[in-house]
Image 1 (cartoon, rainbow, N blue to C red):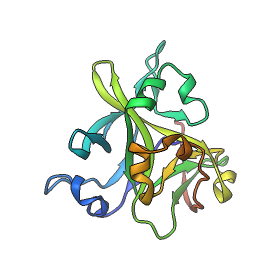
Image 2: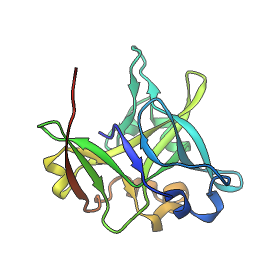
Image 3: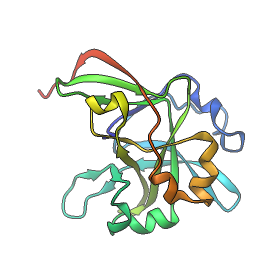
Length: 188
């Protein structure tokens, strides 16, 4: 988890005014691993928006590592330095997960058109890339999957970049709205 998230409508208009991407750019639709996606990170002039590739290349295979577990990322050489120095936020409207019956679930935070996934970024295989940090699921999400993206509340963005980010790694996940769709995942 998380292997796909989405951006609805003009979600980018909800971004903090100092990071709204240049006019005409659209960030809507589904976002999947290996592609470029919008992230927010702290730069020398404050928060900035960037397009980075989603996923770190695995050390001994051609696979992509797209998530990092909040409980162990400081013990993993692949993630430790990035967590200490290069934290980011991934803006989204929600994310998808598939249940045991392979039914697609659309997951969002009620009444919030914009949420922020915690992430880290770094240079891997010669290009800037990011991963999403995950934590334990809560509430209705537990019946779908035991992991979910770590969601940083909008009023705690500054803490993620400049404050006690370790506290946010342990924070309780918000309650989520889960909508099961009739579409099934196929492995043909």
